[in-house]
Length: 255
Ligand SMILES: NC(=O)c1ccc[n+]([C@@H]2O[C@H](COP(=O)([O-])OP(=O)(O)OC[C@H]3O[C@@H](n4cnc5c(N)ncnc54)[C@H](O)[C@@H]3O)[C@@H](O)[C@H]2O)c1
Image (cartoon, rainbow, N blue to C red; front, side):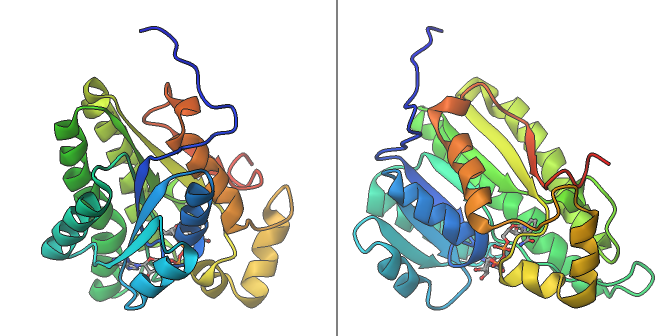
């Protein structure tokens, strides 16, 4: 294949992206950056006000769908709606996620199951459904999965969360391998603590201060910093990267 080059400003003009969990935190930052770089974005989120959120961000190029990534019908409707609205799909970002933390000897069945259902199965089902659309369209595509540093290192109280995110990494590699023949690139991003609603809640107080000191660069991250990687992975500049996990952690996992 001949090298076709890429936009050195990382524009993704007229690409259509679906961002799950895009109504807040990292997903919202990704949505905003994708829009700034010329994409159209469908936000799929559990939040009831997701339609208004999309309108507030960009009434012309963003649209919101209330969607639960644990519910097949809800996902099918939203994917269909996004396709009808924008005519195609090029990019899927799986950002919907939860952190239900407890120690391994006491974590409830409910916490364990809900974490796996949303973080792992939800990510897979969205990838499977959108993957089928991309295969049928026949012009490749990009899938970007939010994993976590908890997928690669042990974190106290993170047994369900870590298992779900390690599962996301395993799944990312298999999808990348199976779908390379269709030109679909599948990658993961693994952040350290990012200062979003989820991040602030999970790392409040003393625990967070201690964790910060253990990070070589000495700080947590911002949603916009994760969005930068999601833009690179969505752009043509990363067309030879697939099945990879890009860690953004201030060096936390190199120790
Ligand atoms: N914030 C961090 O410290 C951090 C670190 C590493 C990885 N991550 C991962 O990044 C992703 C985004 O995290 P965030 O910090 O932006 O969280 P957040 O809580 O700010 O946003 C998550 C979004 O997902 C949505 N959501 C939850 N359950 C859903 C469901 N069943 N269906 C559809 N949408 C649903 C929520 O409504 C919310 O808008 C998650 O997958 C998280 O595990 C976050």
